[in-house]
Structure formats: C-alpha cells, structure tokens
Length: 267
Figure (cartoon, rainbow, N blue to C red):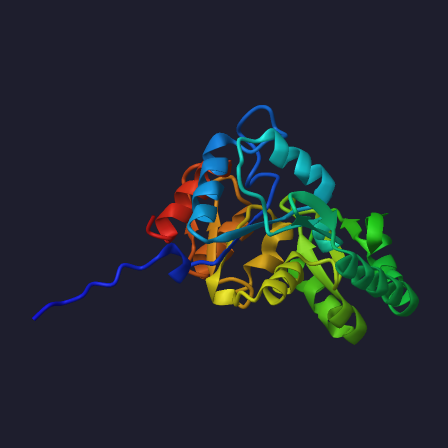
C-alpha cells in the first residue's frame, strides 16, 4: 500500500500577514526609517510563497512608502494602512495611491461623529478633566491624564453611557496615569477587517504582529487568531497574544517578530 503524505503549504496556514511599524517592524537598528534586513527578507520570502502582507500603523501611507523604498525589500504590501486606519494606500502598477473609496468612507464617518457624538463625548470627558489634564488630538482622539488611573471605574463609566460605549473605545497607556478614547472608526482592528473583506481573506488565515496598546483592537480573536509580539511589547499586548495562543518572542523588535512568526508558522 502506498501512503501519500501531504505537505502543507505556507498558505494553508496563513494568507495575510499584518505588521505594525514603531516597536514592531522598526526599532533596534539604525537608520530607523528602513526595515531591518531580516524583516525585509522574511516579507519577501512569505510573499514568494503566496502570502500577502500589509502594514497597519500611525504613519501616513506616503511616509511608509519612503521606508519601503529605503529597505532591501522586493515585495510591497497589499495595503498600507496609516494614521490609525484613517488612510489606506494600495499599489497600482508599482505606484502607491490612496484608496479614494476608503478615504471618502472615513470622511463620512468623521462628519457623522462630529455632528452626532462629539458633544456627548466632550461632556463625558469634562467630568474627568476636572481632576486631570484633557488633551485633544487630531480626528477626535482624546487623552486624559489623571493622578491615579482606576481602570475599573473608568471602564464602568464608559460602558454605562450607551452612546459613548457604542461610538468610542478606551485604551489605557502603560504609564498608569493616562487613558485615550478613540472614535469607533479609528481602529486598527476595524481596518484589518476591512482589508480582509476587500481582498477576500478570512480572519482564520490572518496573522498580526504587534507591540503597543493601540494595536490591541487588532488582537481580538475575531480579527486574527494568529498573533506574535516581540519582547519589547507592552505587557498588556503580551498577555493578549499569549491568551490567544500566539507567541511572544524573547527577542526584541523585528528580530522577535520574525522569530515568533517562523515558530508559529513552523517555517
């Protein structure tokens, strides 16, 4: 009897690899504005084997492209998500363009948020601002710095308001004194889901490489069950990755990402 052994292809495990920039793809090497060679080699290797890759970061897509060009990188991302999902770049015939449909959708979301939800949100935040410092950033991201953070109390107050709960989300910073509140549409998790829908890749074939608390929305299991983090990742990110069955490397930055990804994918 002849027994045929099926050798799994890489694309049987993963079809989309999404990576953050600061602290994940970048860091630990100079110059900072290029991918370390080990990461470029890894991205090119998985690309040659049929895996698509994308970026999801705070960097504008056009600034990201400078990094791609400065790196020893042959492949290019299927999508370059920037500004915490506000913009999305895609390559057409080797040139990077902003996705106009994506941009228009985000403009619509932002206008709706300003019209319907900004005043209730500011009222909610002003209660905290009396005891701390309130800072408003671009596109309705708010920061509250308090002498002491009581995560349970803040979360309960956030969730007790239907509008605030449904239209914003909280992130607690590692300093133990600051929390951020984001409008619902500025979410890396939502951005990854949109890319999955556009290119037709389901969550179970998606891998995320992340390090910071603003990456946590990408680490929900419904977004991507395959997850890795470098040693320099925020403790909350490490906990989430391990909780979801991912791998946290003992190496930092891109060295850790590549090591953990190879281990998780049995490469």
